Image 1 (cartoon, rainbow, N blue to C red):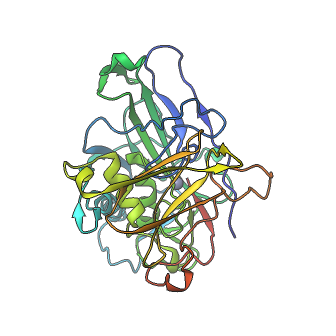
Image 2: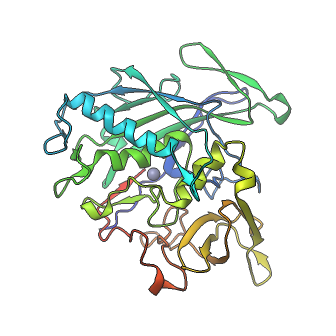
Length: 367
Ligand SMILES: [Zn+2]
């Protein structure tokens, strides 16, 4: 069962000078080409990427599981549950920091465990990045939501005021050396969903590390991918077949674009173009670069309001580029940026057998 996303929410906290604004990650768009907003309010044709001002990303853990919905039985982790949870979360972050594109490490992304927290619900502006299992605010988990990450960003008062400083909720000041920075990110796992420390979880439970790897991508600033075998594809499967702890090329390119090492731009290329229908640029078309030899979907993105697109970080090779509409939202009839169909193979579907297949049965929704 594929479950509809809940509506994205964005709360503007303060007008005028730099202030943290919170948005649920689902509001943003695909992996490395985020529009910073949803389709309805994009005002700039140029995607603006908010990312952390510096690495590593420091994160805190509230290991309490008041609903006892996390199990480490048959997981191979014989430590305390709190330590097993911490290890699973660390493993997810390591997946991101060790991302490679065509065998090369091209990213400086990293994360650092910074201790425990007692917070139970996300606080968007405390500049504490907390991961927890104790959020009992029922409004935070609509039907089908497995987990979510709340990301708060801050924008320079004007383009000429970079770098700038902003204040956290406790009154401390931080510096942002870019036009947009992520100032706070919090992750909550649904206390009504069962998670397992095991990478091959029992039926009806989700692998904590798999879900965490997706959410940690959001914590680092990534948005969703429209490629179904990517970690950042927003639907999960509670059977073992759908567990995702291995990055797809699109994921690795995304994190490398966000936090590039010095050789990122020389090791990869860019495919640019423009999508037209009847002479008019198409906004929000899903553009997929497919390996010309295998037909596999490699990287994807969305077109800007004028129909232009730029797929960056593309590994050397030969590609075909496919442009297709986002799948219509069957419930509302409105094209939603989040309701793409999930694209795995190009025209050469019969040869597309060497990559993980779509989860056979979408049983839950990541945010
Ligand atoms: Zn997500």
